Image: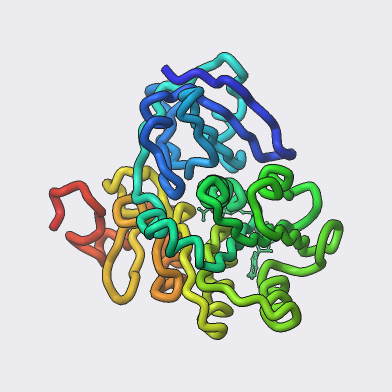
Length: 293
Ligand code: NAD
Ligand code: FES
């Protein structure tokens, strides 16, 4: 059992929980995810790690209440426990492997959309702890939906906040801000990491392709069971079939077929859609179950 040490309601629907999970905390790195279950009959929910403390033996998760399972999770209180807390899963960020002196020369921009701010935080924190101050744009629909602003400010070089309705920070979406930074402030970036809703990542990638800035995206939103078994997170990257939970979650955003991934994501929601996908994709429908190829 994995005890909830702290619980915070970040806004109306977004919850942060610090969970005692010493084994995960000991080895996890930014970019990786965990699968949680409230009880033995509960749905498996894959969540990108938002923070970890090796000293406290804890991992912090942030999630939005969108369905029955996340409502059940949100009902848990400080002192309650998760039945399962499996991880760390997935590949950690590629840039962690770069020699520190090379990485220190890079000008990095993070683009965090809404709840996607949570998985951006451990990446920026890791860089900050290694002497690298990356810039970050946080985009939210309105002021109430901005999360982790203070935490992000503490680890960012420059933090830019945008709201779609102009209720806080700059008015506009993350791309409006990115365009302004590049065209008006003459900012130059070696790479961008964009994490947020699929549609945001698609449009950030269209823009950064035009601007010639390599871009990494995290495809956590298309995962369902996170175990490589269900086939939900199948995505075409550079013309090749990949599975976000096994081969990712991070990919070169300029090579991802976002339109296909979003169409699949919609189809996967219905029984009929899932049957259709299975028929169309045959033996390659699943990820890493090992029985299909
Ligand atoms: P949202 O829809 O409120 O969007 C957040 C911001 O993204 C907007 O304010 C805007 O600045 C930007 N954005 C959205 N659409 C855009 C577009 N077409 N062009 C340019 N910018 C755009 O986001 P939300 O409701 O907080 O996010 C929920 C989604 O985030 C869920 O789908 C969830 O799966 C996803 N999510 C993704 C990750 C990840 O790892 N990629 C992690 C957590 C959550
Ligand atoms: Fe099920 Fe990846 S989430 S195969």
